[in-house]
Amino acid sequence: MGRLDGKVAIITGSNSGVGAATAKLFAKEGAKVVISARRLPQLEEVAEEIKAAGGEVLIVQTDVSKKEDAENLVAKTVETFGKVDVLVNNAGVLEAGLKPIDCVEDDDIDWVFGINTKGTINCTRAALQEMKKNNAGSIINLDSVAGQFGTGGAAYVTSKAAVVGLTKHTAMRFAGTGIRCNSVNPSSIATPMAKIDPATLNMDMFGQMQKHMNLSVPICMPEDVANILLFLASDESRAITGQIIVSDFGATL
Image 1 (cartoon, helix red, strand yellow):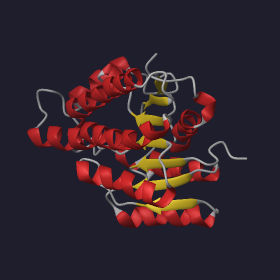
Image 2 (cartoon, rainbow, N blue to C red; image 1 turned 90 degrees about the vertical axis):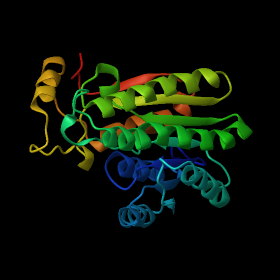
Image 3 (cartoon, rainbow, N blue to C red; image 1 turned 180 degrees about the vertical axis):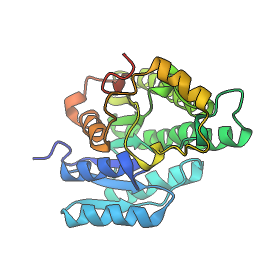
Image 4 (tube, helix red, strand yellow; image 1 turned 30 degrees about the vertical axis):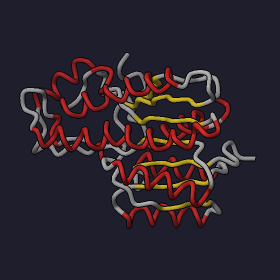
């Protein structure tokens, strides 16, 4: 028996990193997984791995910043698998160079907020329309300690702080109904998104981050985060909602 037997899970940004690791783990634990991202070739590679291991998977190419794409993602899920039990809002982007508030550009703000914040709202709204039919579901937002502690570029930090608020709001709105919403907030993760080009890095901002974080601790691997997401997706966590779970090896203590 898998921990997610019978569940249908949507994972955004599942073409690499945490999203890909989560999709593979959820499928291994019995979930029917729907993987989505903007880049189709990488999604197909992840899907092939899941199928080779005996899992069930659906690919839906999606730009979460577009409301119609988010609605299509949920519609295709229901059309294929009949319901939505779990939504993992993992899709995210990072502006180049850790630009602080006095250096950030409008284009950075629009791009980062479009994916990180608006994208999370778009997918959450769409999934809730299905979850409300059964008064059951787990929404898990992949956030960041940056949104809690300000450690990062201005656009990224603010976009992730907004998701903390959205998590709390959604949990309160549906408290006691069987629909839950939680957030997992890692620090650095060994993923393609975390790679920073030294040529564009704002060293003043990086220096400030070093004062407020212990950067000598290990960084999270995608599988570290996927294991937490698995718990929150499962019925083992049915009493947990509105929580912000930090995963950082103690970097922010």
